[in-house]
Amino acid sequence: MDSPEEKTSITDKAIHNYYRKFESLIALILTFIIVVIVIVAISRLGYSVYNMLLVGMQDPLDHKVFQTIFGEIITLLIALEFSHTLQYVVTRQQSIIQTKVVVLIAILALSRKFIILDLDKVNAGELLGLSTATLALGLTYLILKLKNSN
Image 1 (tube, helix red, strand yellow):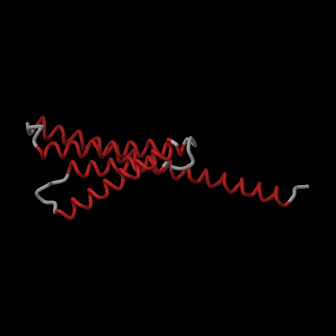
Image 2: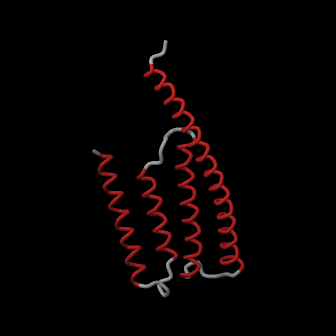
Image 3: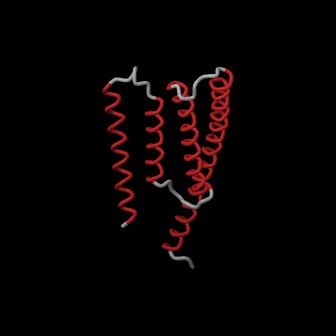
């Protein structure tokens, strides 16, 4: 006969197994959504490059052209990195998303914000807020890296 502890253990394992399947399903759905976003973003990037550089014959070093194109490229990189991170959950290589990866994605997003920032329209408070967030994320990443190296 099974003892009460064994029944509880079997029940806990079953619940955990169902939750892992649920988690994988959600990660798979999110991955599919990100794939759609990447397809739309890559087509938009291609359209922007075609219109700005080939049809419009604009200077690629012009600040506005640079902001638009590289802002879209970094958006693609963020989406791809997020998708890559979710793939670990789908393939069960990791059951949780690593905090360090989330911090790096946030740093990428802030980098994108700085690239597309129009300095003529931004006030000092916004710059201070973005700078503080960048510093906080950088320190968080440093702490995580030091913690993992020990």
